[in-house]
Amino acid sequence: MTASVRQVLDEKGSRVHAVPPGASVYEALELMAQHDIGAVVVAEGECLAGIFTERDYARKVILQGRTSRDTRVGELMTPNVLTVSPSQTMDDCMQLMTENRVRHLPVVERGRLVGIVTIGDAVKTVIAEHEATIRQLSSYIAGDLAS
Ligand code: AMP
Image (cartoon, rainbow, N blue to C red):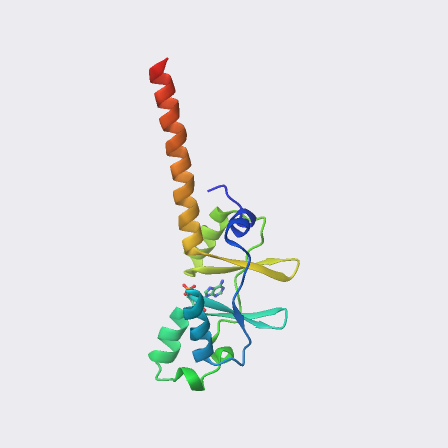
């Protein structure tokens, strides 16, 4: 995969849905449902404080008998966030996500949060690149057979 993170963000946009650490888990889930996403970034002003995903909800709220309205996102978020920069490739992202078993990577440029890439973006990129290769090979074969 040769596409860069910047190219993917240019295509899908750089909108990042974030909540403050003091938001309730319920509010985070509402935001996820509203935007059809599986994670929210936790930010304190401009500062990336953590990430909270559906997996955190399943394991740290439901399975531990907590309630989403009475639990703050800041209590359960993962604080040490793995990030990428826009100049990295989607290959780097795929490797990081696979090795660390995460599906979301916030994108940070000069200390500022500028987007997020997900496992879904990586899969889409692989499929698009495979389709382009197939098209190139098909036209090469068709051209070769015609000559
Ligand atoms: P996910 O597969 O993205 O739902 O995340 C699985 C677990 O890893 C959850 O506990 C998340 O909070 C955490 N997580 C997700 N993305 C990241 C990331 N970029 N850096 C650190 N932890 C993460």
